[in-house]
Length: 243
Length: 243
Picture 1: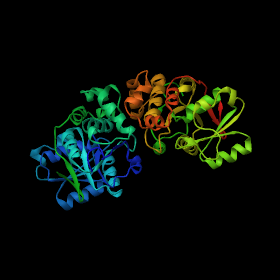
Picture 2 (picture 1 turned 90 degrees about the horizontal axis):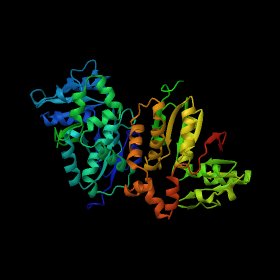
Picture 3 (picture 1 turned 120 degrees about the horizontal axis):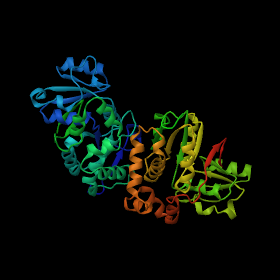
Picture 4 (picture 1 turned 45 degrees about the horizontal axis):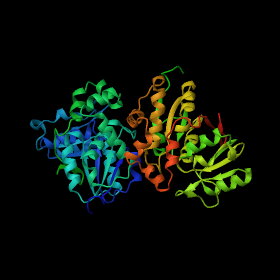
């Protein structure tokens, strides 16, 4: 397809995914706080792959089977039976290089598997730390684009919408965009300005409060900053690899 | 409940309604272009009630049974078998006073029946023409509030989100609001400023284009203007009456 024949849609929650035809689309899974930010960071720091799984049990099984790092949190703490958490700062090169990271997340993994089931031919993950890599890839692709916000238990959230808006702001001129969600996301991104941390704080974003209660301000700041881990995670088989 | 113990949530699409407990809530059905704007206008101009129905067939049956005006559009034209359309300008006092209006709408009626099925104890309709009446009612109620955007075939739309934002901007100090959708809606409303028509046009809102293609600029302007038909439509039994 030539430029402008490609469509761009934003899906603000997994519960809305069935409204969109993804059979000729790149689906960008967006789970800014913190799954997709941590995935980008681990791959940027040399992890051989990241395997996203839905449950703690499956994480333990795969970790044993493959000799991988098992990671995931529930209610802000490392889940029972796993070794590490969801913070991007737990995965420096000195630790994660050439290792397999098995990561259990709820919202992002759910959306990824739904996109697969709906026939998406290509799935990547997006977050502010890999914003430019995502945009460059989308500008080159021949496919349509669906920006898929993982949200929070299906409820629309601010940070994933902000990231969708950041992508749209960079690439919109190359797509047809009959999508109010996309226009509202871009509007939110422009309104937020450079200091997205202050915007999330001042607007009282729910996830800002949830993570701040766990003492994770540093994580939030990193996850809202562009291009700190500028790689392209692509889903292949059962895992995300550095594309 | 005292002030601030009441919650306020915004549901951006009927497809997300099941995420919210409405069993102690006033649900505000929002279908700005044009169903709930027309409902407020007809009641403001003296209609004895408005009966919202899902299908053209049901509209014809009820219209015959009750001697009511049958109204509704499909693809921008009065539907086959009905007598009038969806425009608020079709319902001046000289025509609609003391009459029953049977109105078939898709998005708004669907959301209303879902809210009923989910156990909402009180349902009202909201639109810019009756913005103040809605806000005054919500400030007096003892219940929680769910702002329910009827959306477009379940896709989130700009105008219903804008109206939710207008309500939130007026009443938020009296509610607890752990809801990013509400915060984003208010942000959109503030960003739009006074000239919502220009905002919808300049942002390329999908419904702006759809209705403009049918020559309905005047309808859009009216439906985005506050308090032109400042009544409170309350759902009782099977009909909306002037509360």
